[in-house]
Amino acid sequence: MIILGSLLILCVLLLIGVSVPLAFGGVLVFIGVFGGHDVTGFLPTGHWKMNSIVLLAIPLFILAGAIMERGRIAAPLVSVAELLVGRIHGGLSAAAVFASGIFGSISGSAAATLTCIGSIMMPHLKAANYPRGPAAALIVAACPLGLLIPPSSSQILYAWVAQQSVLKCFLSTVVPGLILITLLCMVNYVLMRKADLKLLERPASYPQEFVRRSGRAFPALLMPIIILGGIYGGIMTPTEAAGVAVIYAIPVGLFIYRGLTPQNIWPTLRYAGTTIGVVMLMVFVVVIVSRFLVFEDIPGMAKDLIFSISDNPIVILLMVNLVMILIGMLMDDISGLLLSAPLLLPIVQSVGMDPVHFAAVLGVNLGMANITPPTAPLLYLGAKVTDTPVSEMLKPTFIMIVFAWLPTLLITTFVPEVALWLPNIVFG
Image: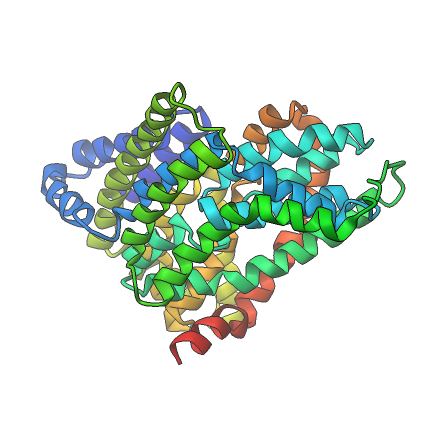
């Protein structure tokens, strides 16, 4: 009854708009008052878990993403994508998908990807007669690529919780991310096939223009090469790579793209500090709640419940995915991951799923949940960024969920090689 009461309180608090850390704090108060547990006994667990060098990578990547967002690093990436596919019918919106994948690999943040790509691409899409609702919905549907294309803060957290290699978890989401990009572009083509769009004209000197724009975008493209090359080359740990990302982003934003100025450095640091504070507080509180769930053997109870319904691995994996979707629909990706990973990992391991494979499944699930109502934080943020009513975005968003995100999730879940192919090649 305490567990059911805790879940009910958590859902109610989240649905009425209470922030995630305070909602989980309310759960802890309920457990302490009515569950007969001394919550202070779990506090050292939270402190011990937070005292991790791996976890330090998350605030550093958040800071790097904030600097990139203010530094206008996304603009040259969008320019190259427009040149490559802007002359194709529906190509301009597809450029937003490619740009989201590239910028997501730099920032590792879905919100930063949405803010940058959405604010840059939406005026171009409107000028080219793209329908406002489907165009905004596509930008929103593509921004969680920042959670899939490495480096990803979510995968760092999962590796920390599940005691797995961060590098393997990074690689596990690359192929699902590429599959998602392909499906989103296909769905976009179908949605835009009857629209009266203005196509971009081919520049008179296309090769020279391509070289010019690519040269302009090279400093931005060099960043993931430095980060991932340093990590996979054994030169840097993920935490050190996050620090290098911050150091690299500052001069690039200041002197090359000049979006970062002495006047807006302090607001950028303040914004990043606020975000980091919220995220780390959330991690601390959710870790304590997760510890309580493990202490009460809730993962074992959940496993017994699911196996009492069916022992078919396919049915079990479908139920696990459904649980993750429901969790993700109620909370953001970080808190959803911290809650679902210790709860569901023992279940999927019991049917033979590799923990690194589960990292990819979890990443796709949480990315999709971030754009799925009722909470859908990225959907509402996208409405503000693109100046589009949510009502116009709902139908095309559901179409993209059904025909792009769900197929990606099913392929990732039931074809293990999709997630494990790259980790097996790199690590043998």
